[in-house]
Length: 420
Image (cartoon, helix red, strand yellow):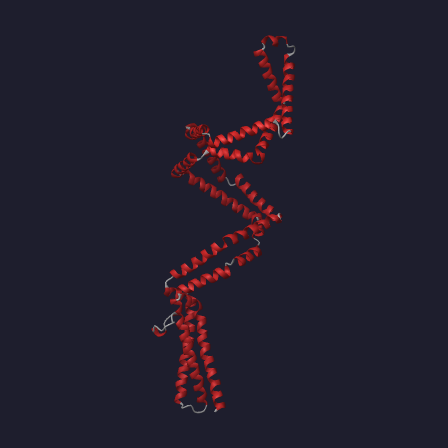
């Protein structure tokens, strides 16, 4: 600012010196009665003096009242601060922040490609990893504060108290029923059950169960069964095979009776969860029991504390595996983004949609901020700041006005002599 002020003062002195010089030259020429060359000097000096005065008035009138006189339409910048602020804001909004302009710049910059290159750089991945781990560590320290703990417990408890467990469970089951997705769940359960039945462990358990049943229910019969171990093992295998045949039949028949019964059970359960007061009350009671059970609360708290302690210890290690995994994940994301042109195009298109969607709101907000900020500036400081920015260049208008005015004076004097 000091450099600009010195430059402004210097140029002002030069422009004022030329104006005073033109006035002195005019006086001297007039004293010579206009004889000989002084006639031309007088014409030059008169026009130069008029041009210098006119340009001095024009430049000064931009920033203040000339000679302190409240002449109308002077001190323009000071008095038009509000209008200038609004026009400046609108200019920036419409020319610099127009959606088409921003999208063109966005496309040219190719943010997806730039992001991929940034993420793939090893140093950037390490920096991001350290930043994330620091954030996690600071967050854990923040959560350790007892006041935060009390607020979290109160907020979580309040949310759970208001949570409609029955209605939510019913809505989830209803979502599963859409497009028969609950049948896909049944298929998966049957598949897993069939896979378990095929194991030796399952068949051994069935054999043991059959042996226990025969011994308990038919003690006399068990005495006459030869080679009971082999018999029960074979029986277990046969039971498993029969159950597996049944499962295969269910899988092969979309209209199987088991499927219809399962669908009816799910449909009835959805309706009861959403409208049966008795079932809803039972579910709510279970929720309250779990919520206020001291053992459950302590167990959840111990799990949280263990997880927090592990994270804190892990984050403090210089060769933290968590940091290594985050660094690898960042690099992997960058590589994936770099190698997948469709993903890059999708990201760029999404950013362009964001600009279109929020562009008008942001542009108007920026324009409002600029206009409001400029209007709050002190009018004198605002005017002085603008004068420091452009005032030194405006002094060249005064200098040029003095010299050009003098030249025009010579031309007019010559024209007058020709026409005389």
